[in-house]
Image 1: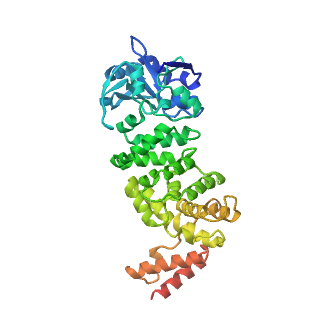
Image 2 (image 1 turned 60 degrees about the vertical axis):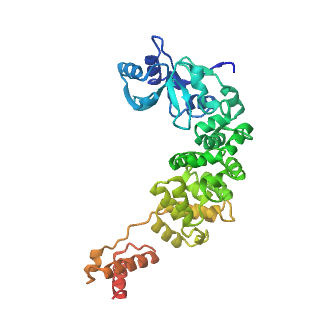
Image 3 (image 1 turned 30 degrees about the vertical axis):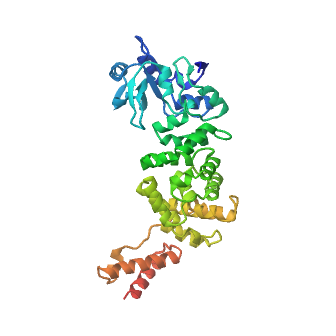
Length: 414
């Protein structure tokens, strides 16, 4: 493919410290360019995010040059040619150009090189293989500019070969299509993903989890997940039948309530009906404990929630669950209710945490011991009974009312 060039006028390219790092690496025969997502996003018109740099200089020379320029160098992946340069509190990954010597999944044998074209050809998708010089010149060796213009996610070279190098690229193909693609996905790439999907079972669950979470918050996730469901891939990844309508409704509710996109909440809408679903996802995606606990809480009796419940019932649930889990469970139920995102009753319930903060339970063990309750099971029972009575009474703060609740709890437990 003929090398293509284009100019990019990006303000961030002229800012320190990036310009200083590039200048430090670009002399005495060495080159450095910004590569990957920052270039792609600049062309698409999205925030550049992290900025990665590729260079012809070998890692020891990279360290010597950036430290001489006053930056901090951290050898985070030096065996693979990567040095993290910290400048003005920001990390910049600087990686020496590489070329594949032998490929077998993630553990490909690579050698450092000086050929920008060969370095580009070993990347995954054409839109991720562009490089940008300090003067704003974009170099394209694989057709990435045309694919960005067409909003097409396309593997570099033979799709099956690229996937065999790392089966995570199957999920990345769908995630990038959901984030940047338009229309139908590239047919050759889609066919290769379907053919190689058994390779997903070889991946670590942590890597799969990371891609799934990114996919769930991508701009065009709904049609992409629908396609993955149609070909059987999403059920393979999640280990259960996806609930696409609930997931799509969750996105609408987040927008209606001005909530940030939440991958855990969206995963619950897509995949959780009972607590066992949360347990399955914990195993399949190696979820963090906090993520699993949120999903399990969402599944715990969500069908018992009604938008028409009295305000005091909503407050009782909010008190027991806390704001985050209350919102999770209410929104999950709303996604599966016949009312839409504009329903005022659901809206009022979902926004209860913004209007009311649950008070702390005012009674302590000492209050019951002062009333003659000894340490032991009876003390715990009295505390629990008093808390339930306090909730049922509407969380009174008046000292006399609280004392009466304590007295009644003591009498009931004797």
